[in-house]
Image (cartoon, rainbow, N blue to C red; front, side, top):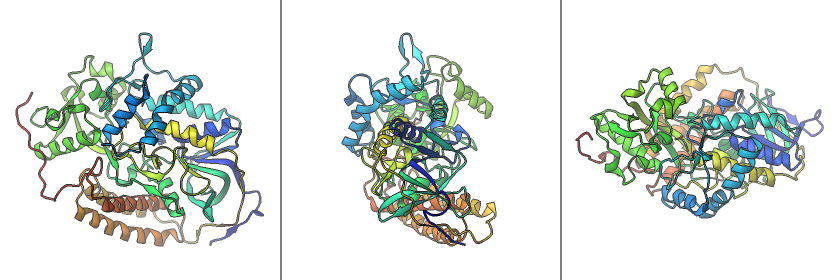
Length: 513
Ligand code: SIN
């Protein structure tokens, strides 16, 4: 049954700053709020570091070398000038100080070096080598020390395996969240709440994100009344290994000279863009899909690399071997959902449109990515906005209020319920809201998703299981994508509108190089 929690209920849980999510953005927010002297509660669905996308990041973290304008220009070019230039200024001006402060001086991340300097890597659409990395497993070399560091900070408490189900909102202000630590939702009251819940990979059939990437923060914020923006810009990575459970093959591999070949053995990217394999990500992803559609398959040929693949990228070579992929023959690849450029609308300090609510990392729409994100800027965005939001969020006391608890009167649903609905959700998003969209397809998706939401809502009225809320969140996110896609008739970046269902992929020659 539903119930009421009041301030008089036995000692409700409180925090000065509640952070939801434990990727780089959530960790950075927790760190900077703690540095301000705040009592921070960080709640995370994760039980292990690799439950967060940040841990999976391969290529690395872009930073500035000298003039920040050069990174700004590359970001703007990659997204066809659709980003917010002021947000990009925030990113590039804070990049080097944030990297130095947190990654080098606080966490002592052991980035790869070349002689006396860092081994800055090249990636697609970057005009210079500027990516700090550790092999191609950079994320785990940042996130694991970050979590270890926070676990030693006295004023940070970390609650693992814990999901925030709903935000607590009263008169336009957010007061914390209901957690799944109690069947009807345990309230945690906070002076400020920072959402850092990551991506939306579970909304698509295949993604490079860890399981559980259901857009929870975006759905909770939207349902509480916060603005979301740019939801149509869902980025597909061009080179995920085309195996049953795809895994990412970093842009860095193409940055080091690997080329893409179609089923005829022909290197095709020079026909699509002057920068060939190093063209912006949306261009390469669509070209790869075109070539798969017309010739049957695409492979990433790692033979042009200066060093053998297993020396240049030992962890990727060993992943290939573990997964039965013989990289010496060229690695079969296909585009795969990777990153949401939009999300909860925030300003340069991560402030959402509801009072005392912040969002950082992939769940936030800072304006930095516009319609297409430049490679290796997501860890940087999470770090910069996390630090700024955590600092800005300090100074507010938790104010417990009366809260409507969740209903939990009906028996739990069998696991297969959510699995079946997720299947329906992912089929329609993948079919109609993926790399190529049509007006008709978007309308179809919208109808299917609305019916699905009706069914899911009928269950969430009386049940509160985590999988049901994840399904609810993923459905809300998918509808937001469909709505944003329907409202945007400009085909740009990741929102690519095919002229008609009969549109033909670009024609290219057939001679192998
Ligand atoms: C990659 O290593 O290719 C992924 C980097 C990114 O998504 O920015």
